[in-house]
Image (cartoon, rainbow, N blue to C red; front, top):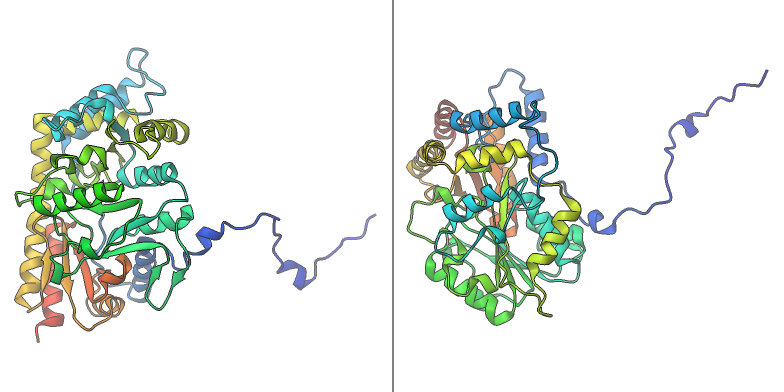
Length: 423
């Protein structure tokens, strides 16, 4: 009988390690991604106060049901998959032809964008990742400051940046285009260094600001003079109230320097369904004359098997006359929430931005740490907001409040804000 070898306590605590080195670029990301970090803090708070009703108008997750005209189309498609006549397997990686044509006619009519320029996907965030793979590690990048954190984090992961500088809260080799109330939340392009890629979101997350035609004309001219490519994130354009451009391709010359990405997430409540699109015009060329669209198509075909055919059936229903009407009604509901939030903070004497052209309200707490304000609001009101500095150093002193929420929860959160700050 063989003796039984018992592991010593030291051996039990020693984890086996492979000989594979960790990706050094991911290791640069010292902090966790913003939104899971907020979720972690909310969970800790709920454990501390198990009886509290925690409200989360800070997160960007939609709350209202998808309109039935859209879900019924998805249900019909799902049921058809159980029949010989209706079954389909892999589809075109670029998306179904009819949906691409519908996106072109709905959002890009008379702008010279055709269905072959459009790639249907599982969401704008995923396409931003795939675009970064196209660009590679040897490009330089600029972002609005503050901006959606995925732009910076993906650039770090791709190896486009240097190390994180704690003293200025920035990564080396990224151009942070500061957007402040003093410059109308639009960067002073005269102070911006040349980069290969410019990520630009309008209406902006988190500030809620929307670029005017004049500002977008300046941005396109700036990119053209510098031989840069703009990645234009248009995920909130249907919330626009002002008469601002609904696409960067409304600006002359934009098709030669811009890519546009958008999503059904915040229009139709597709945050869980997942469906978006990216426009890469044929006129957009790399420095050697090779079309960017061909490389993007190569990455899409390699990394992606196409959006769900059920989701695409929902997308087609979204763009029908009844679907568009239903989406606008849901968007109107959220816009009313934003109006309530803006009025609440303004009545308390705060300077407030956004809320008119986007579902985000950007509230200024001058002289205060964003994380301190976040913690104060959570601890004293059980309401989850978003610390502005999580979107970049330019967000310090601000918090973002989202209009996504049931009306009764938005009203309750606003009552709690009044109790906390009505001095």
